[in-house]
Length: 183
Image 1 (spheres, rainbow, N blue to C red):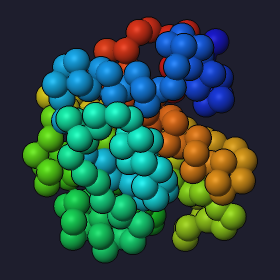
Image 2: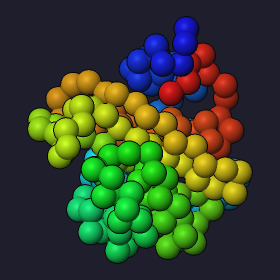
Image 3: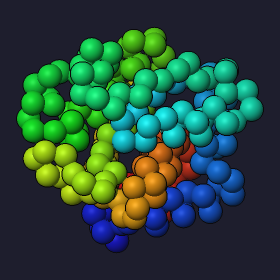
């Protein structure tokens, strides 16, 4: 199956079935085991990723903090996203997602930065981007990975799927077990 043919729902189901528990529990264990710290920059998910991470016992060992950067001004002022990246038409693009992850990592001086930006709906940004279009980025000393995914469902379902996908990408970035599918 080609990478572009894989639906996010398939990926998430496979991750959960491989590890036998929630992705956030597995991520928390890997962060503690590797003694890595993380900070999160969220737009589309509005704090859901941070909520999932901090729901784990002992999360203060690895979770430093986060910024909900819903407005473009916050992306620029607080995370250092280049205004030119947003001026390309929308804050929903790969360059913005990577800059958000790098910006939160630098600002909070963590080992890892994680970000999510996208269109949850029911309307789109200007110029129009498809509802469900999501970019997730993770960055650390081992490199940066950014994935574009297209999610379906209601606004709430898209946000939940984006948070789960972000944790899945983080899990893989931390060296989680290989899975059948990739984002």
